[in-house]
Length: 126
Length: 288
Image (cartoon, rainbow over all chains, first blue to last red; front, side, top):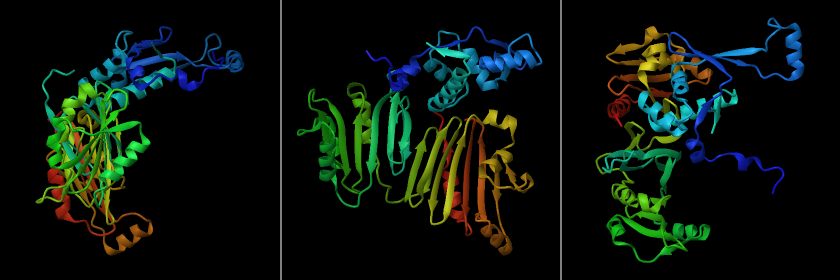
């Protein structure tokens, strides 16, 4: 048994990643605006030192700092597809059909978008 | 995804063309390397190289040395139809004698084509049909190369060399050069969403990357066009800035297919109008 598994072992292959099911982070607050776009309000990850500084000197001293993110029409459509049941592959097929683009293009767009949502901890892949 | 019927579409890339099942996604992996996928699983790979003389034996020897595949001495009957146009050699796995690769060398133009089967059982029948339709040299009457990938196709004179390509989400770009002339081919999708935020002329000038007012653009039915006609002094000034003085660009809106297709030419000298119009006439969007 290796104490520290190499990074390459934990990276899934393309076919494994496409089989994954994205799941929304339930702790994130989001709302659908009148034009159909999605607006997120999510906590800003800060180190304890900067969090203490914010609580002492920030405008909203009681709460934790938050950031807002508004998705465009395409991003909002992908977000609506994330229901904890559909796999990445299914989302790509649906996106390709609904926007009349090739599967290859849909794969580029959807995977890059899911990656950016994952980096902000708005979704997790199962 | 596969309903059992094999509807085919034409694919053309850098000197070769063939018809392949519509449910196979074609990925460009290199200037002379295509990968075919079905349901996100690779099924088939195609690599090729143009030669001036027959190098079949030499390429085969290198392949055998660099892989653990062995040469199959007898050719199955399904492959014999190809021997009229190509020298054919099959390479199999040593343990299970499953066909993993095939080397085809054109008897006419000596192009070496290496076929690699990812999933031998499932793809072999469709692969045979693909290889039977393979064309690796232009016909007698036409010295143009067919470029047909994704949902667009066009014919470009064979002396235009592919410099670069990119297939991003919603924007595919190919760039070619020939004796100082640079040609950019682009195709955007979906058109309706692009045109919500900018006009056809604005998109064309952004893609063309030249600082021209939209008033200088000629508007026609579902297309826009711009042609620069610099004076001698303007040409000198532009050349001093190390830029190309002659530009010709057009962007067309294909309403039914919801696509935008663009052609952009630039050169130091006046552009060949006849060639431009021949390429433009052949540029079309093929619904998938």
